[in-house]
Length: 68
Image (cartoon, rainbow, N blue to C red; front, side):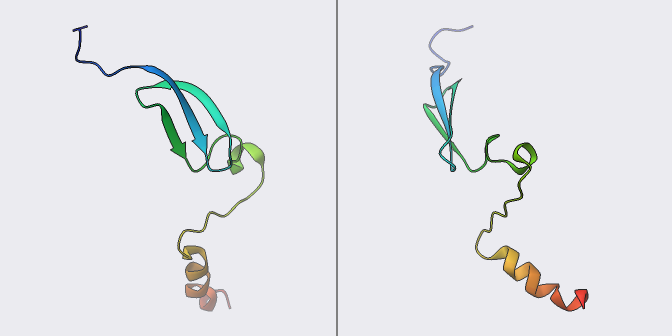
């Protein structure tokens, strides 16, 4: 490897929106994520809807007529 052209690779922390912190290594000191293995429905078995700007409600209103 050439010297002086690579970024510093060191300790990093992944921070989830649920508050979970996971130590790892990266070129950035802190990484923010929305869903991790602690709160993901696939691993927990619990369904959680992440509603961004009312998209779930808009979907339900749009397709409520076809369900009747």
